[in-house]
Length: 178
Ligand SMILES: [Zn+2]
Ligand SMILES: [Zn+2]
Image (cartoon, rainbow, N blue to C red):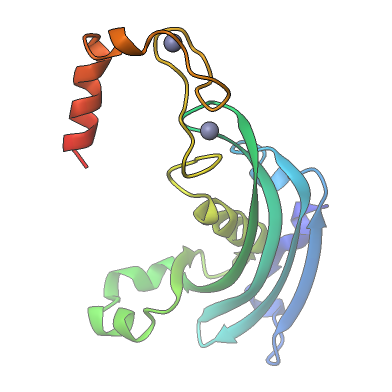
């Protein structure tokens, strides 16, 4: 995949729009954030909308996430729709709230008004699709904070001591801050 081919000049987008698809085998687009277990495939359509560019399409891949509780790696499938409006940064200063409201179904991203960075748009959509709370499963029991046993596999002997440990207080704090 050549990322330069995904930098599209605004003036090169024909009136009827421009469709393109690409495959990122190695996951270069998000390699600084997550490894992938399936290639990133994306199809996008660029449409000029005055001085804006509307980008629609879809992206799919599977990323490898680390469970927040048990620290095991697990695959997470991403199938996202892309529905983004690129607005020239220069418009930002005179952007009124009413304008925003009419576009509330779209994500608005700012660009320099000259080059549409399709790779960046797709990257952004993938990263947005990754959940904040990464759990291998909702019911993951996590690791024992004392002995490190994966409590999904078997329980350990630390449990009686757990109540008196500093972690008990921590646990309370976590619960009450929710
Ligand atoms: Zn887990
Ligand atoms: Zn334990």
